[in-house]
Each structure stands twice: as structure tokens, then as C-alpha cells.
Image (cartoon, rainbow, N blue to C red):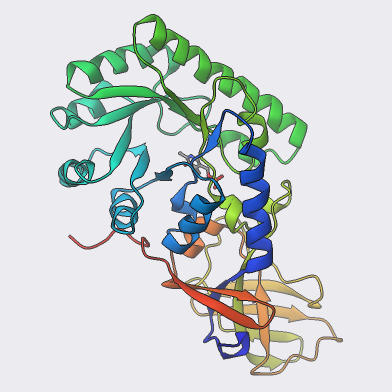
Amino acid sequence: MRLSEVPTPALTVEMGAFERNLARMHDFFSDRPCDVRPHVKAHKTPAIAERQRAAGGVGFCCATVYEAEVFADHGFDDLLIANEICDPTKIARLRVLAERVRLIVAVDSEASVDLLAGTDLDVLVDVNVGMPRCGVPPSEAVAVARAAEASGLHVRGVMGYEGHVTVMEDVARRAEATRKSMDVLLAVGDDLRASSFDVGIVSAGSTLTYDVTGAIDGITEVQAGSYALMDTTFSRSSPFEEALGCLTTVLAVHDNIAVLDAGLKTLSLDHGNPELPNDVPADVLYLSDEHTTLVIREEFDAKPGDRVFLRPSHVDPTVNLHDVLYAFRGDDVEDVWTVAARGYGRP
Ligand SMILES: Cc1ncc(COP(=O)(O)O)c(C=O)c1O
């Protein structure tokens, strides 16, 4: 298939940028004690995970039980659900899953531990390292670990996601904040060891902190996700390239307005509007359900039927809107990848 034959709107992956992103991330870790455990929530696509595994990814992170089930079905057998699972229907599914893959789940409170009691699962104590989301306050981590062991769970280590630093575009400031967060996590690891826990895993990190977190002694794995596809938000302060694009068709041109066939059902706007390639003389005005309206400059002779790429602002929720990704090189579509783990599955 040629790119010109792809039905729009379509999410695309430019293979050159994608392969350079994988090489950049995985080469960084090739001679370090720390590993990359790629986070599949960014792409939900087994074909991408296969390439990450071939590049050196050691196991995978998931955010949802459905992601873990889908990736297990595709032969991925070392999965960390880097998230708390508190829905009883999903806890029942975890038991089934743990019988066929190496599964670890995050816990961050005695209450979340109680819900998993009797499952015999491996767990990581999820520690708040500065981001107001899940994660136990550091001073309470040992109590959670003790509660986990008392409930028949097996504590394998700790995790801490320093997501609050990813909004810092100043790289030096971000690095400093990252080190502070990792000091917190490492100290909790030491607390657990002092209480006789075997802390084999210290899991942290992300696309924007991989080179800082991944170089710290004692961190055993980095949970990076966006680096493979990348968006306009993260590419502003990172060496990774935007491989993800959204191919659209021009529907209408009136005066200085052009309208594209991709809208809110195609692109997530939580990190802002999509952007246009530098050589397109226009600006995004706004998006509605099925349309993007552009304000065009005089030199842009757009006409209905023309193709225009948009650059998405946030990988994860955008990919989750799509059934497939078109992997292309030049004008050739090399593959159509299924976004197999999108959504939450059916009961
Ligand atoms: C628990 C956890 N780990 C790691 C990440 C890193 O993701 P990314 O590399 O896309 O920034 C995220 C992203 O939200 C996350 O929630």
C-alpha cells in the first residue's frame, strides 16, 4: 500500500524516526546495570513491543489489567502492572493471568494490599516520590510491605514514578528534581532492606528522565513509554523524534480557512492542539468532533483532496483512539499494526 492509499484520518508511524528512537533508548542501557522495561500504555501495540524486545527491552510495564492480558496473549511473559488494581473483578483476572506469565503488581496502601490478600501475587511497593498520584508516603512504605507479606503477597522491591518532573522543560532543573525523587526511592529501598525485605527491583523513570534515572546506582529498571512514538510536547525537550503523525485529507477551503478530516475523535488535546509540519504555511485554529480548522496563509494553495500531516501533542490518549497504526517509510506503508490493547476490553 502507498501512503496516498491510506484511508484518513489515520495515525502513522514514520519508521526511520521510530527506529532511531528505539536505538537511542536501548543503546543507552546496553552496557549499564540498569534495564529498560518499556511501558506499553504509550502504544498498546504488540508489534511495537516486539521491536522493543528485540532492541533489548527486559519485560514490559502495563497500566491496566486489559493491557497485561492482551500482551500475555501475544507472548509477552514478564509483565509489571505499574499501577494499583483495586476493582474486585480485575483482581480475579490477575489470579488467572499470574498462572501464565511472570506478573508483578503495584501496591501503595494497606487497603490496596487487603484487596489482593490471598492472591499469592508478587508486588512492588509504589512510593510517592513527588507526584500527587498513587504511591505511599515514604515513611509508610515499610508498613505497606509488612502488610503485603502478612497477606500472603511477595514483596519484590519498590517503584516510584517521577512524573511531576516531566513538565519541566529546563533539562538541568528536571535532572535535579529527578535525582531528588530517586534519593527518596532509594532511601525507601534501604528502609525495606533494613526490615529484612529482599528488594531486587527498584523501578522508576520515563522518557524524559531515562538518562538521569537510568544512570543512578541502585535503580534497576526504567519504565519508559513515549520514546518510541513521541509527540510535540515531549519532543521539545528531548532527543527523541516525533515518529507519530496523523494523516488527514483536506475537506474544504474557503478564503483563509482550510478544514481537515481529523478532529477530537482522532486526536487527544489534553496537551494542546496538534501542530503542522514546518513547511505547511498555516496554523491550527481549533478542532471539533470530526474536523480541524486551519487558518492558511496566502502561499498555501490547499484544495479538497490534498493530504496534510498533523503532529499529535500527546501519544498515549491519541493512540488509544485508534484501531491501527500505519507504519511507513518514504511513500511505502510497510505494515498495518493493530492497537490490540486499546480500551478496557469487554466483560
Ligand atoms: C507509572 C508510570 N511509569 C512510567 C511512565 C513513563 O511514561 P513516558 O515514558 O511515556 O513518559 C508513566 C507515564 O505516565 C507512568 O504512569
